[in-house]
Image 1 (cartoon, one colour):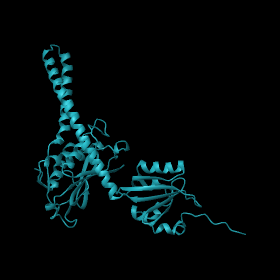
Image 2: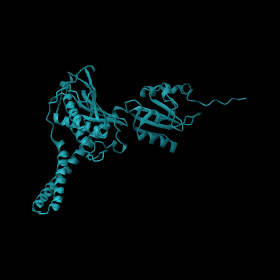
Image 3: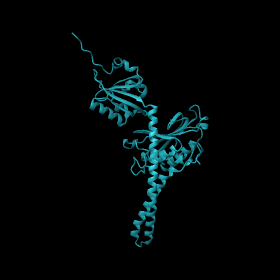
Image 4: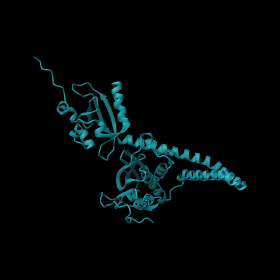
Length: 388
């Protein structure tokens, strides 16, 4: 009598798919419910998770991911065909690091419960550079659009405000003057908005400064605005060299990011400010030996998928009542310093990273090792760095 072969189970998958164990590409095998039935060593290394922590759990139980992965899995199931996406964001639950991956989902027909082969590779530097260049081009186009729009609105706005003021002087009835004053107040509000939209077009006034002076000034403002609900943790690399920048523009850029984080948490939560040196970094297709990075990390709800790809666009805000200009101005100011702002966001952790390159003469004196870190978790203690 012939004994039929036993079905391949998750427990024996390691021996059944020994060829996948030697791949450098992370591979997961899933069943119909998207439960992990096999994970190769490359997947363990990529996510810093042991195979035992992934097996017998659904993807949603192991990972936090964006809609791109769900779309790929649904398409593969519906069409019974392979599906790929070139920028899937995924991180292991409980881990801070967000992975940007090229992801392919392939339906398979094997004995046992194996139905889908999930291949994941970290996004290449070329794709990241192309994305940065696209964001830079879009930022420049947005800046010109905003500038032209502001000029077109600003000119008639002065006439409207002046006419309302003259009309207010001619009216005898107080109840009618209420209407003209509303017009004047709204005209002043729009004038202030136009001024903010035109501000980024001032060329930066460069000078030597310490990034921690900028961060401490911002910290003091946020502590004053949110004295009770926001706790600010500081993790500074005190050995960072001086950078060349416009003090006021950098303060405004960092303030917009930190204030945005505080407002996203409704004034209650924790923000971490972290400074480090970055080496051999490429920005807008230009290579820099060193750059200063500032990370603003909050434990708020995260950025919704509806605005994620447009977060730096003008007049786009995920908060009710927001002007949608804070992050746009921040990106513009940092771009004028040849830098960029990146972000990763999942519920419970959003990290904005400001990257400002150092000039070559300054980079030559950059610290050679990540020493000199200073941590201070207090929200009301005296700043470690002077903020004039």
